[in-house]
Amino acid sequence: MSDTRVVKVRAVEKVTEEQLEKYNRAQGESAFLTEKDLRSSIKSIRQTIKNEEVRLRLKYKWLQHQNMIGLITFMLSLISLVMIGIMYIKRRIHWGFVVPMMALPGSIMHEIEHDLIHNLYFKSKQWVQHAMFFVIWFTKMSIPPWYRKMLHLRHHVVSGQRRDIEERLIGLGMPLGWLRWIVTLNPFTVTLILGDIQKDNKKDWNKDKLVLASIPTIIPLVVLWHLLLSFIRLQLGLTMGAYDPVHYLPLWLWPYVRDASVLILLPNLLRQACLNLMASYSHYYGDIPQNNVYYQNQIIDHWLMYPFQLFCFNFGATHIFHHFIPNQPFYLRQMLSKKAKEECVAHGIRRNDFGIVRRNNRYFEHDEEREEEEEKLLAQFEEEELKMMHDAQDNGLPDEQ
Ligand SMILES: [Zn+2]
Ligand SMILES: [Zn+2]
Image (cartoon, helix red, strand yellow):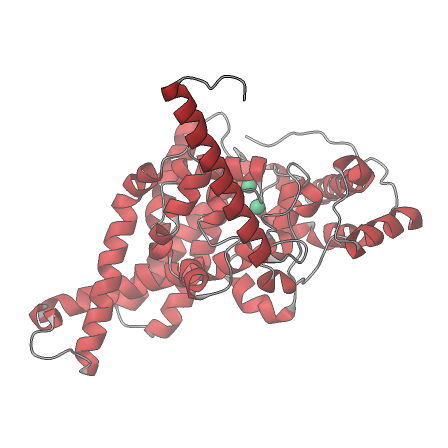
């Protein structure tokens, strides 16, 4: 089946000097413009992305076979993973090459999973989607794709808000410190921040369900991770005396732990770390207005970031286009990125804003300490008020004072 969407090319309005001046003034004053103020820019960016899609679809007729492209890239990625795995088991490739080589098809699998979440392949054959989801679940060794679908669609609705669970799970909005680093670089440590996310999402999300959903993949990965570290410690002689539990590890287990780590654990850690780094710093968080796509992302396309972009299909440079137009497959997003980027930058969208790291993903500079203090005071006040209300309920409302 082919995708036969007919989309027309429409004229794009150029950004005016007056508009740009207004945008710059707002930036200078650390003020957000309303969606109404930005409407013409948002419309132009969306239309440019759509126009590029039409142009590419007319130029490259094969693009219309969207299901087939999805299936072929999925199969090729799967075959690559298996072939590299076999070559490693036969000791034809050094493990140092195997890890990045496995991470590359893994990153394509991640993109296909994301496209399936947006229903871009096999819309009318749900069972194919489920079958692909199942395979992807165990190649990525991450949370179940069906669960991620719920989190990701939520991300599109509440991007950059406290309720954006998907991005918060990779450290979005946290100050740059050891906790953010380990959350970004190590998917197991997410449990450390689940409580905070739960607090902001009491009504419609339950962290325990996420933990339950992670059992089939994350738990074996955590066990493997610890076994690998223990064996490495044992081999390097870094043991803690005669009573260190690593002495009880059976030596026959080591080759299996080593091979499973090289083929499954390390490529996924590498891929995930690169993706998390790009994803968590291309999204703004905390101070941006709700439902205003203009402020949700920036473009990261600095050459220093290429090594990270390699393992996440250029996420930092192109994810923003997906926020403007979500129903395009990953390869198309990359193909139209040049024109789309030019348009975004012309309309004042930020590019390579590395200050985002210092600002903990906020769009503008904030006095975090003061805000935290204010928030604490407000919570304290609300608590006291609640207590007074309870007292009044228990003791009867006081008469006029
Ligand atoms: Zn996003
Ligand atoms: Zn999406």
